[in-house]
Length: 251
Length: 218
Image 1 (cartoon, rainbow over the protein chains, first blue to last red):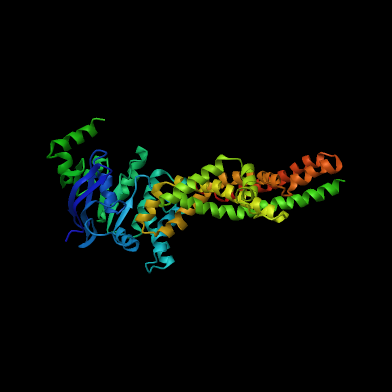
Image 2 (image 1 turned 60 degrees about the vertical axis):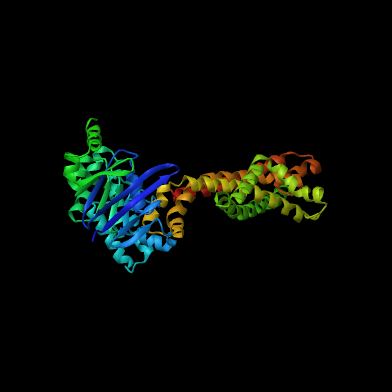
């Protein structure tokens, strides 16, 4: 059974159709990279998966459980919160909470949730995650004392702390100085090696190719091409994909 | 003479501080209610509150004092404030509370709107409830943002209390001015400035302390 099945997602903002019927599925442990020009609907698709936006049509199924069905009424806020937790989200702008240290950013949500773990367990888990991110000496720093790359790694640890089934990244390195992207890509790569299920919206083509099992190319609201990463990026089937990729390499 | 004047001014200043403290006590929370209403879903309530805010911020506080004190008698022929000093103080207090609540509500609104959407979204994807999001994520950031403009308003309020004398509330300037008539001396009026300066100086220190306490994050 696929871990995620997305069926015919459509989303309109005012009168512009951003998603025109997105369907795909992925297996547990897979990493999918989503590429495409800005405005193609990549971010909107991630936001629909995380239920930050509600699609106008379509369904989202995780592990056989239907999380979202546009033809049915939304659940109450508590049900919605539970459903959201199947997904983790790492934002382009990190969105760390400025008044909390790196460690507190990671432990805040789990301790508010009260999922049976003691505060000591949560604290240890937080330290362990930050350690994995290479931030063991930064745990007690506030976000403004950290570089962009460090902040993004804290954000990844924060998302992992809730043990999501699928971790989504929305252009995780786009807000970073070029010399800081490497450290973030490295931890994402390590997660891929550990078979974390991930969907990564990115502009880093080489990274998309190397880290992902499959690549989805989106173009004006549809999935134009989907396939093994190396095929789509090195040898795209569609002319539009080729155009997009060559426009990237030309500058 | 100096002691007589000082005592009289102190008495007036007590009245000033009472007006100041009670105004804050009521207008800070009332401003929050107005803020919620003016940002809420009810379109009619929103329109009404925005209209009231426009009137209150668009006219002099002195005029508002006069309207609230004399208005009921002139327009409806009812004497709500009685003839005592207490009644006049009450009228002044109500005018100040309404006026400052409107200003505070706009400060709150600006603060709420200045919190990046990403903070709410991050809390949402981390499974926090709306209340947890407000209490644990938003509130402190909001306080940090509104402390400087609130401190401005509060220090303005210290001096604005002197307007209450237009409806004969015996605050410090009233008492200082009284010496011109009774003793033919004007220096007590100037002397009142010292009281304002000391009090606003203390408030400045207090707000600086609060800002310092909140400076550990950005």
